[in-house]
Length: 129
Image 1: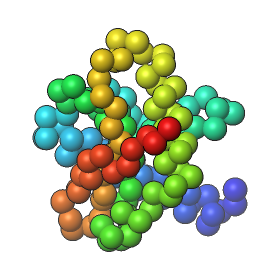
Image 2 (image 1 turned 45 degrees about the vertical axis):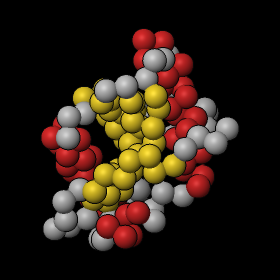
Image 3 (image 1 turned 90 degrees about the vertical axis):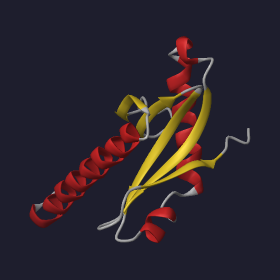
Image 4 (image 1 turned 30 degrees about the horizontal axis):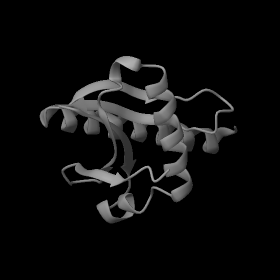
């Protein structure tokens, strides 16, 4: 990467980390236990990074964090392709942790926008497989 491009990438990385910090704080305040953050799938698996894995009661939530200039823009930012990749990543996560088999998986999105309280969309989509 060169100069300006590298700085933009670093700036986006900082914003992403800040958004994930806010999301994790919001989840903890709501009684969730954070099990993992920034969980990267193995290369070549076709899966993507899971921003946050959290549990509450009998639910294990795989949470995608989206930070955008508005909550509406953040809500539109999770593509169908990304959802499929997250489903694969969640399956890989659960396959390696048999102790979590009794929990019901759920896919959530946590929206972050300036001057707004983080908005948690529970059960944003389902695994239809």
